[in-house]
Image (cartoon, rainbow, N blue to C red; front, side, top):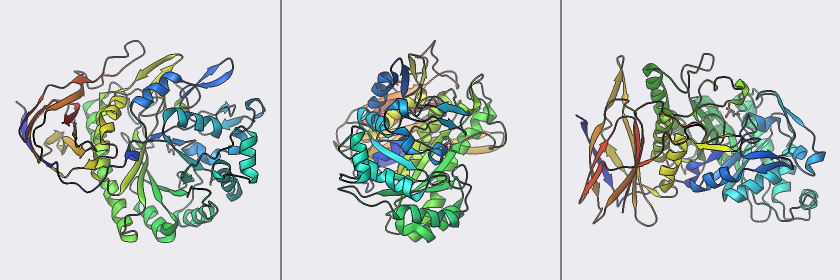
Amino acid sequence: SAQPLRMIVDAEAGETTINKHIYGHFAEHLGRGVYDGLWRETDDGWEINDDVVEALRQIQIPNLRWPGGCFADYYFWEDGIGPVEDRPTVVNNLWGGVTEDNGVGIHEFMELVDRLDTEPIVVGNVGSGTVRQMADWWQYVNHPGPSPMADLRAENGRAEPWNIRFWGVGNESWGCGGNMDAAYYADLYKRYATFLHGYGNVRPFRIAAGPAGDDYDWTETLMREAGGMIDGIDVHHYTINGDWTTSKGPAVGFTEAEWFELMQRALQTDDIIRGHSAIMDRYDPQNRVWLIMGEWGTWHNPYPGSNPGFLYQQNTLRDAIVAAASLNIFNQHARRVKMANIAQTVNVLQAMILTEGDQMILTPTYHVFDFYKAHQDATLLPMQIDRGTYTFEGQSIPAVSASASRDAEGRVHVTLANMHPRDGFDIQASIRGLGDRSVSGQILTADAWDAHNTFEAPETLVPMDFDGARLDGETLSIDLPAKSVVALTLE
Ligand code: AHR
């Protein structure tokens, strides 16, 4: 029988808004993410994939980060404007060594942003580009004109500025973005950021390349040396098996040891956020600077037979549970964490969507984002919860992760993930201040812990109506199955 767990949520309290940007996305020129993913090739060149757009609009993505990733510090924006046939090619040295035709540049990206009804995050090139190139790009996208770059933009068919405020100053500058140390990058950051000026109504929201995982020294140095000029710090933390030098383990057909380790790693995100937040709280007690989880998600061995540089992987129920638990962690830290970007939206790493020719499948992770969109810009509700235990070979982790919010219409949303592959939990929740309501919900689960969708069987793992929740006054009983993600609405 399921273990009983207690949960208390105060539906009338809460001071922190869950910034919608926590549900953000990322599209790098990498593998089939941009070319042959968000865009498809036609006889007339690259065109935006309408099916992908329609699916992404359904989950209401609040932002899209582009063009990288590591690619950002290789990218010369001037090569991606003007007539497509006149653009030079570019070798994507890091990701598979393929040659791209620069068919997707800033104009095409902003067309996609418009179609998705989302907000752009552009990452500028610090690693191999000049201060002038970055300042010119900023002027190109934001200056109302007349100015050299606004005039050039108009010549290329866009008179109005785009008003892009989120601006990354380099990416992973400790690694692929230039292998710098923290103090050197902090100096460079200040230099590049100095030349991003407010134009028209747009003030730059300047995002510094943040640390990898638990590199607290990077955050300390950045905050100390450049904190006054930083609006957001872009922390990258992936959920992997093993370490970066060993096999990361398969995406499908894994062992329980691999399942357990991945869950344990996902939960470490909480410690990492606490560590960086504590440093930021010291330098920024006003809580002005955003902690951005600018790249997160599972990273497995590449799909068998695929180009390893393309980072294409399958996506199972296990990935969905990692996503759900990670998003619960971000929600719980919403005071400091104001943005996050899952890596990456289409065909790369923990993708929402996989495509093959004209076919498209929605991954289990897509459905988690669909469940969780209700939290966007809602008020985080204080919660106490017994989380149960999942023990494997002598090690234990909390099994259940949860978060709750109240939206602008007063509806209460509770999201839960159960990392235990065999045990369900019987949650007895007291939701204070609820009044007369009813509960409805959806669940994502399957018999197989690596259940996933394929082009042959695209609906193997899809959400189902959840009938395991009962509301009696302010008492909510939830019969939470093993290895599941559940989203409830109390209205
Ligand atoms: O998302 C894939 C890569 O992971 C990104 O390009 C880089 O920033 C990170 O190392």
